[in-house]
Image (cartoon, rainbow, N blue to C red):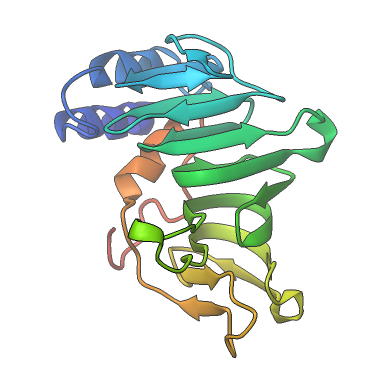
Length: 234
């Protein structure tokens, strides 16, 4: 418990997510000791809605719900064993069938940590089956360019921060890959382009940090598996 408290206090002192609202989030986690915090929305910044209605802190999110963040907005929330940091201009939907453990990233950016058991994530370009995982996704659905220019093809950035994944690109399902990671080992960009020789290409680590993963895992009473190890930090 003391180790967890030191971590949370260090994250608070670092000003993670900015000064506004973080004290309540950290305080809630500290009060829980090694236990998970209560499920629901724990930090809102800017314009956040659930099922098209303005969200409020403490509101539960679960099966059948859709969370949307506007420009310059952000939401941190907990669902069961899972915790999420949803960034601005993003829409994420959770399947109505609890047994399916389905999450759809319709657009935007989300960092997620998941408890034991299998989960399925659908993005514009891929079906992602995960187990015991932390992952970061940026989904760009594509569309018609400015002034009626030719449509841009969808693409998804996917980083398996740790855990295991079965990654199936929708454009060329035969190029599926199954692999494991311990610390951001194999980020990928998945293209919605069947004419590419490889529609999944290697990428770097972008727009998410180890401290964010530590905070999300702390909210559900866990540590990320890389915690305390040497090597590069993100």
